[in-house]
Length: 335
Ligand code: HEM
Image 1: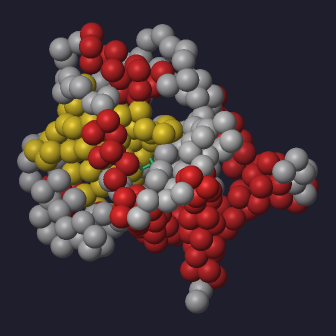
Image 2: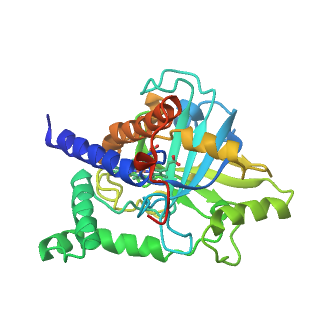
């Protein structure tokens, strides 16, 4: 087994253990959803021939699910961070009825795109995840992390601080980035999603991001629109494949619009939709081979996302077949 595979196994095992303790029916990361919304993804008719690849090959409209989330795991079972605290915000998009063979075989007709609200990821590689987990554990138990570890994680902690500083008014009105690269046939690209409208005031309540979406739809008849754009790799120096802590700057690789996302006014804040939200699995590896994820961080996500989703689905299914005693549920958030 390679060192990278051993690290991935360690991360996946630790995640599942943590998931068991803090929220087995939730995603280990990005557990807090602000809404699972339906919409349309329309491929533009003016894409340059060179980039008419995979789902962008033909001007077509796909039905989509879009999930908006906060990144942090629960601190204690059942307790998710209030939206008023800094966190990374996610946008996950699932195109449906996408024909062609897929890289994984658990979903046959989907193409997912997974993004966050910052141009760079906070870790350079998989070892970074292990280091960061060690740092978090030491901090949680009140110990001071060793100086060497602090030095190593300095750039990552600076990015986390930058992300946490971002004030987000409404998930429908902010920009998102893939941060990691993907294939577009023989090209390497990153992708981003830009809103057509910008936010106004920042509300203030523990779940204001979900509330902001509900309120937005209650006050408008307008469809929410985003541009889906790609940035094409220039060279390995300014637009590297490895190390997603390095931004592919707009000035080096100007974004090119390839599709439009439309989310119509809708009611989504009800129990059945939340159940569907919890049961879905978004992964960068739910993809046509033409859009396969690139780089070692993306590679690690293949197994980790699949095992995490499987773990929470098994927990939900087993619990329905054979009810569990309270001692194994511990669903009291005050505990
Ligand atoms: C080593 C790197 C990474 C690891 C170990 C990791 C791990 C995870 C896990 C375990 C989940 C929950 C999956 C599930 O249960 O369905 C998740 C979700 C997510 N991750 Fe990552 N991740 C990594 C990198 C990234 C990067 C680079 C991004 C940047 C776009 C990202 C954005 C997201 C988002 C937005 C979600 C929520 C997806 C949803 O709504 O279902 N992750 N991640």
